[in-house]
Length: 110
Image: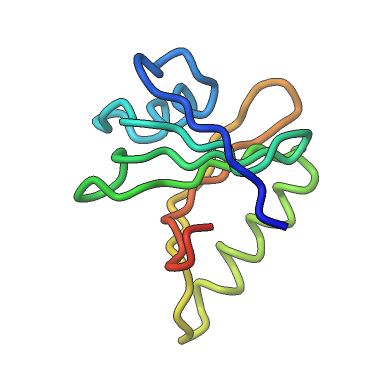
């Protein structure tokens, strides 16, 4: 089933994903648009135009325990394997029992 995704545009500095990314990547620009990829307790947004050379960044907000497992996979396991993977930029605490994880957009747009 092909679902329409919500796209946000305009002044986007108010959005929690943007605030988290700008705290992590202090010199980044405000996104051109934000695409809502997933909502709920494990949410994800596509921040257009904020990455290196204007690339999109995927910002995922996860409960802290789940994020710890994901971080371990990306930081300890996948970082050592000679396989092609999407770039993991890092993480930032949300302060409300959640953690932000930041990735380069995968080639399939997710």
